[in-house]
Image (cartoon, rainbow, N blue to C red):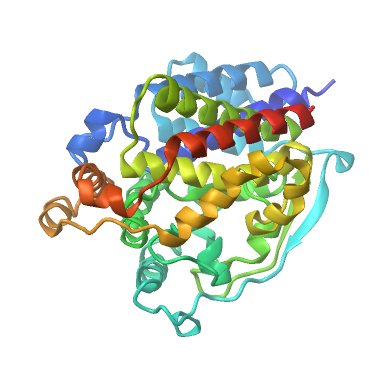
Length: 391
């Protein structure tokens, strides 16, 4: 009997590693000395070992012969392993009753002329130009999604959410995978130009994932509202699978992380710099959507507020109201041009240094004043009430 639970776990962990690797995935040494060092972090090395172990176990149920041989040979090269793992994964024939079809229609192309705040979204236009020149041959889809795509963003608060679909033929070549890694890592500079405190890279899947797609990667409803950063976008039929395990794991991670932050700040009297603070606010803003996913409903984040408010007490929902208030008055940091110029070859390092320096300024903390303890008390109440409703 085919072990599809094991297959799902393999796909989920392979996706996590591949996404991290293609966004850089460096350890501290790699970030500091890129491009001289491109070594992945210890956490990513551990994750790749877990994927490798799962590949061997899958060989008992599926045709994973190449993957098994590669792992048993002691191969540790990430791009070689990614290539073989996905090629073996792509050979699996999925039973029709395990998936259902969900269509993403052809997305409109991003056009800066549709926007009033042209200067703010200028990096998105530059990213589209960069993608046409440097990424087009590697991808079968590249999108901006979220509030910039739907044009209801808040200046200085909104980050740049992108979604990448890697072409199958690229995954046949470890060399091409590493080329794509270089190009996607550099493309993160455009995200940092929109939001210097951007806390994530590109959301990445492969064409192989489309045939067995968990919406924990990205809800199809969110993709339907996306704008294409490449010309001539195409209609895509996703074959979606059950992702309840991954959805509940994501719910538990968000819940635990909010509780840990509460413990750190309220009980241990620690403070948050602006990068950490904005990350916390984004997590709480996303929490209603994560909560709904854990209950089996995958929708666009903006719609999640109206759908979930009735599930929570007035005191708990204050956390969501506070996020909205803080979002509307948020003031972003200003680039220290010397830093971003000196480290232009390493965009993420440049903006991390920039954020750490400017994040300490007292004046900036005044601008982004958050009643942190009150906000965290409400957020933890939100988490506790959500946990009672997610079984």
